[in-house]
Image (cartoon, rainbow, N blue to C red; front, side):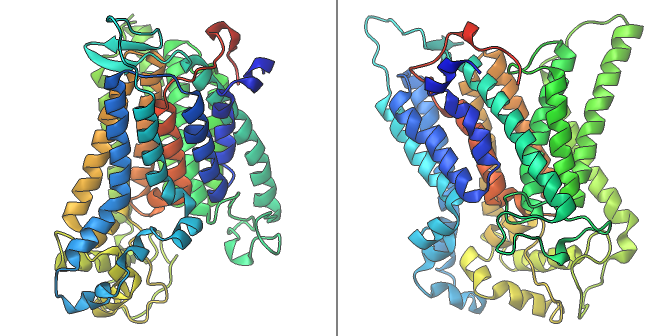
Length: 491
């Protein structure tokens, strides 16, 4: 790496992937250091249009954090006996707003922290035009103010390098852990026997609290790498300074991480994405060879690809449920243990959360009520009193419905759409930024599919990965950066 990189604020984009793979607390430290503290001092000025987009993005992140508080406040006005526990103040303890909760789950606090910080940076770094002149780092794209990020090449190239080296480093540790059970974060320095796989090896934790958290985070990096691999193969170019071989190695590493985590749905998503990219590559080659067609696919093809992946994933899950439907436990069952059959006790969880949602379809039951026994009460009402594990829904859509109702589900979906539209404006006409945004969409779809049988979409480990990717698009250009020809491609 060029020695000048070590004295440039852009080095933080290289370090960010190391933080994001090093566990929840260090994830939070990395988000604040790389995407807030240093950019506060080193970012360039920006146009008023860019400021408005960043401020609205910050407001959307804050809305994600405060939405449960608002919905719970509305629920407090109701008199349902099941929610009498909700009136016990202080209510905000269940929404990670207390100092103790922030320390316990620092990444969840990054939502509001980054939202506030990016908003302040946007206000502080506004550029006031003089005589119609705009500095080189700013520009206007189709009448909409957008960032012409002068350090994009450094930003994405350094991030890709950091992602490669961090992935290799943590993968080596993961292999050792998978075969020996060594865990540097455990007091005993060993993974417990309950986390052995049928072949005698250990489920992969890495530095996260649960193997499925590791699987969710690895899905982010796998889908991003796979998109970059497909783009590099299709266009015969280096993507973010890395070639197709390097992106292929990254996709393989994180695909193996998912495999070693023992997450079945996550592995199904990996196979689904890999099959789709492979089929798309074969189709492109056949079209070029037999039809002599070198025309590029239309812009709408990308959207079609995302929709196709989602539909195929939903169809695969539906087929899985139908094939093993005879294993599902009927209503009124009196006992059960997670892990029996391909879906375990998930149908019982789903049935319970559907009952919770039916009783409060608009606003759901509320986070505070869930924490104070309402979920257990519903398990008993549905006839599952002897069920050992009265878990959450293991389905992000039913989880949101049961806790925040239709209003919460549509609010979160609207926030996702609005975030995408904001990031699309910030991407402008930059090819690299458009690629990066499309890779981010792939990463979101991966965990939205994974969320059909798991709740890891809301895990701090996964949330931090998405916030890190958001930040690469939102953080304005930095004052001190290398000339483009100083950054060499390659990971």
